[in-house]
Image (cartoon, rainbow, N blue to C red; front, side):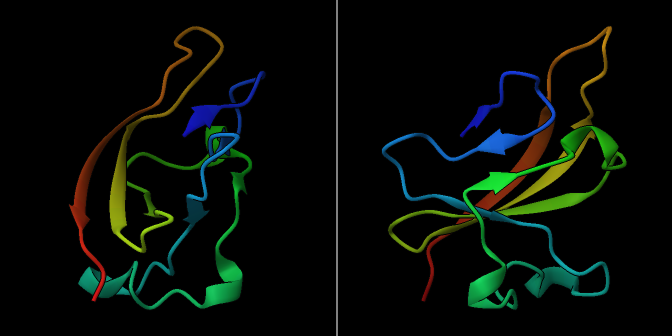
Amino acid sequence: MSPSRTGDSLNAMTHGAARFAIPRADAGLDRCTTIAPGAWTKTLDNVYHLPIDSHLCVQTDQGNLADLTLTHIPSAAEQYLEFDFTTWRAG
């Protein structure tokens, strides 16, 4: 994944097939496995507007999943995104 030019979006790499989704807040530990197939996207917009401790889910082209917990949100002064993550194999 990579940031957009302005840094407010995340993009799947050009030749990659990774997809992003924001899970429902009440989804609990299954938050990434309960996302509808049509909710996944190659570009996740408005990352600046997500609060700390928000979750993002990533699905790889192999079907593996990652749950990202945002620990730092980009700003004009600090232009980086930081997160903790857990990954697992689908299935």
